[in-house]
Length: 338
Image 1: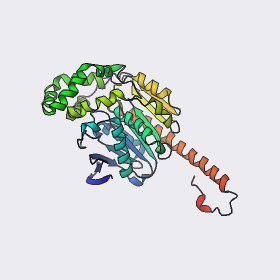
Image 2: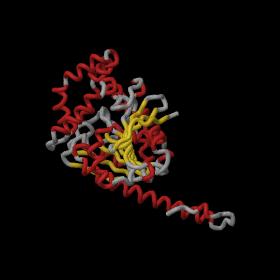
Image 3: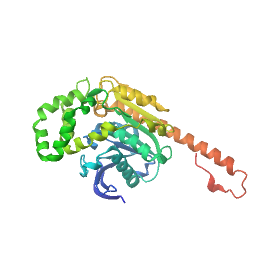
Image 4: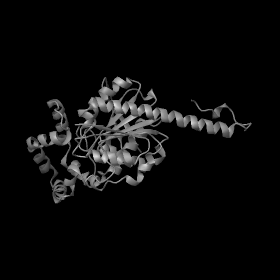
């Protein structure tokens, strides 16, 4: 059973440790009041951490102030969360961890889920594993720089099909410390690749590049390599219909060569109530590179989600009123707030 331990509380929010069902500590960062009514949960990408949302969070506060409960957390093996058995480094397990976070930190009330890259895939897996929450608790989803399947067909994902990836996975499992040292030694080579792969075609600040590169370098190679199998096999196309009841945002950059924009087009085409947003010139790190525009799209998503929730509540209220209206034993307790 999941448990929660408070680590710190300061002007930057509350920091918690949530114990996953298998005991792995999951680091959670919470902002705003739980009594705010709606919780927005942000799920980061492969080899990143909660800090990848920092710029976006700043802009969202301008829209929402303290009227929104925002939750960010580090995946197992990432950031301040604990390492785990590499066999658990799968997207399905990340969806289970997301459920643990929700049950522990936001056990009641409507939820908006926003995922970036592997985080978007985690949200899709969550919808399959916990379909009863979609439309009841989860009132909207934001899928940023994500894909529903076939990440190895276009973009840098094609490199995952090569034998070098298999060799890397074997080497990391056999000698993780040596491989991690090798990773740090390759930093000078890695930084320009990072710039081209994730930050698009526009000039970015050295500070932003340093933050993004540091997050990737701080993630162990064991974590990085162990998730690759799940990414290669990822396919949620047959479960996308589960999101038909709620509004969705699909957003990505035109210059994303990690998960090219074509993936977003395909993903959006299979959803019903969806807004597709293309940010010209943005790369895979769109949440950092174009944080203000992404925040505006998420704020619009929340407005759509709240409107949809009120419509469903009014429809439910009308049906219950019609059903119980002639029942002499039906009292005011059946009334539903508008």
